Length: 263
Image (tube, rainbow, N blue to C red; front, side):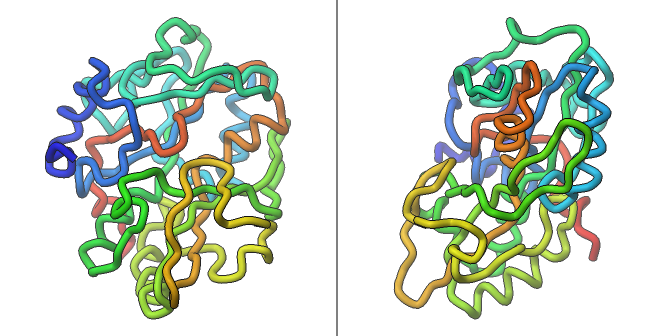
C-alpha cells in the first residue's frame, strides 16, 4: 500500500488532491477517522440533517459545513471537500450521472456538506485485536448491499438501509460486536449477523456497491449499517442534485479514532 497506512491524513489528502490516489481508502492513515460524504443544496439540508438524526446507525454525523463552505468545520485542517476525496459520485434527480475525481466545477454557493462516520474507522481496533478484515486482505473494496430495512423518513428523504459486510468466524464476530459497540459515531455494533436473506440480500456474491470478497468455510457474514445509505436514499428521494463519495473512497480526517470511542 505504499506505506499509506502509516501516513498522516494531511499527506494522504495531498496525494488525493493531485491525483496520485484515486481508489478505496481502507487501511490508510491507520488510527484516523474516515468519513462518508453527502453534499446537498441548502433547500434540502434541514430535511437531510433530520434524516441523519433519525437514522444514526446508518448516518452518524461527525461534521456539517456552513452553507457554501467546502472546508470542514472541525475534523480537518487545510482540507477541501471538493478535491480531497479520491472519487465522487454525482446524482441528479435520483439518477447516478457520473464518477469524478474533483467536484470544483459542480460546487455551488448554497451547498452544504455532511460528513458521516465510516466503518473503516473501527477496522483499526478490529485489526489490533487480531481479527482479519477480508477486503483489506484481498486489496479490494468492502462489499455493500441494499437491504429490506427501511430508514426512518424525514422530509423528502426515505429509502433502504445499506449495509457493509465482513466475513468472520463466530468467535471473531462476538469480539467484533464488543469492539464496534464502543464506536457509535461510526455505525457502532452490527445490525445483522448470519443469513443475508433475512435482510433482503438475495445473492451475497453480488454486492450492490463495492467488491465481492471470499467467505471461507466456517465463517459467517457480519453486517454493519453503512454510510452509503444516502446514495440509495438519493435514488429513491430524487433531490435535484446530491454529490457523494464513491463507495469505499472516503474523506480522511485529522480526528483520531479513539476520540470517537465511548469507553
